[in-house]
Length: 160
Image (cartoon, rainbow, N blue to C red; front, top):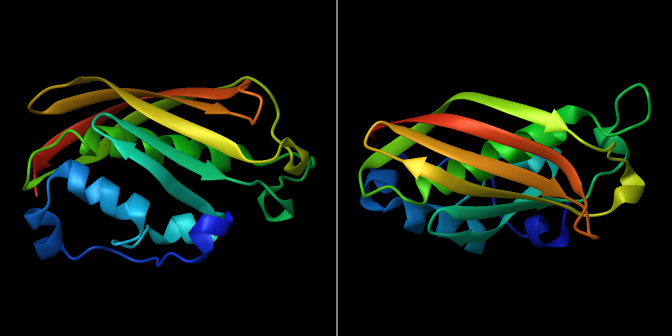
């Protein structure tokens, strides 16, 4: 778990509270700790560290708890980080009372991730966001800026 995530709370944001916030306010609340991160973030040890309109960054430091039987970090860590950063990037563009959910996403792994990789960063950015469908892409990189994984998502936008 990153040091910053250690002091954050995990859980869900009540639906009534979500409806009061714009998408950007919601995502910034996750990043600054005024809203709880989702429980899978606590389980996997990742944190929402940056939030802007149409752009979200999620970070984690892989460790032994993330390994697959072959000894590299399970692809599910990068996939979950990409799903989160891309979906939240779309959420950050939405008006108050609107929500989104992932319809599909694709991921391509470029390099193996190990605990020795150090902190990894998943950055999601909106490609296009319409009234019903949002598209985003994401990149997972290491501390040297090398690409580890790339993904794209399609999200359904709806009244929450």
